[in-house]
Image (tube, rainbow, N blue to C red; front, side, top):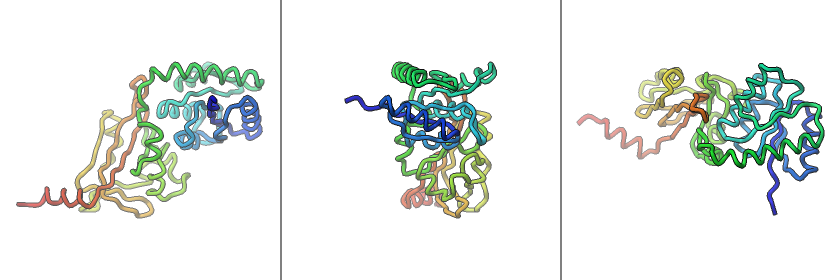
Length: 267
């Protein structure tokens, strides 16, 4: 028996979202989520693992549908179909950056919807054979990781964090998402407690990896503190264009801390 395709709907009009859901379920698709904002769509996509995302171009909030769709595709390679009531030339050019597999114009019929969905699923089944690995890593591995993983946009604002990072940060989601990373956590010298220089401008300017290892600690706003190795890595899309930054925090074990102390001890 063929598994039903999993579809995530991103639409801030509840009535339209419910209509779409009913149309899809009637045709045997599995609706795995109905989401109202671009920020939440990025967060939920890694956990929901949709086969296709239906994304309204105009969404309420600080992130429009095109920006959210572009990041979802760039990060996790989930295919996108845009929903829109209108789309002028400027919007169309902007939307191309998300590499969508279709546009559905409102109002639409059940036939319009299902025909576009079938075509997009088929085209992506061919396209994904030519896609390189996801730049931030496999979504399942990110979600299951027992280390904090935080993803920022190309200005250093947080757009995604995995469950372990959520536990460490110990803040409501709305106090993390879209915030500049240093407004949420601090990177400090563990010996002097001095805040270290922000690595993000260097990552942005030089598109290079920046790591801090010795005498490094991470401190959350809730005062959790870890001795850690911290790595900031630039993220590049399928065309090798810079679009974001991955922050990986690796907590040091007691043995690693002791070994480092012995290595640096005077002889």
